[in-house]
Image (cartoon, rainbow, N blue to C red):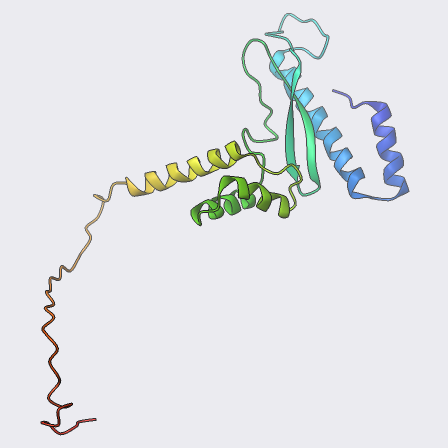
Length: 188
């Protein structure tokens, strides 16, 4: 699928004028969107507004998808299909933020930070769109699954030596040490 010539010429003019983060972000968004459209056309069996005998379904609008990158947030359009499902391979499903940010969210959850305050933390780290409470809950549910799998794993593959100790400590009344009473010589 060819990129829009007007958009490409604008991008080229902007690059000639001087590289700016906004120019890189818009260029990245343009290329990613073209790749998503190409992948959708391959999944459908025909391009946009194209008829072919290999066509399996058609496009039925698009849903917005916010992809957070190092260059900033990119707004992509993911085509919807009335029959079957489609999700492009470039952005991972349900992965709005990078793995490092996932680790921060999980760490905050482990330390008891509320899901509402995690949104403020994510905004502080530079993700303009923030993170919803439901997204935090989904991330933390994955953490709960991982912890549960670790706790319920089988340990029968090897033997574990152990030492069992049993002790009883009885505290008796207030008795003074014989050394303190001066009955025995001090050994210090």
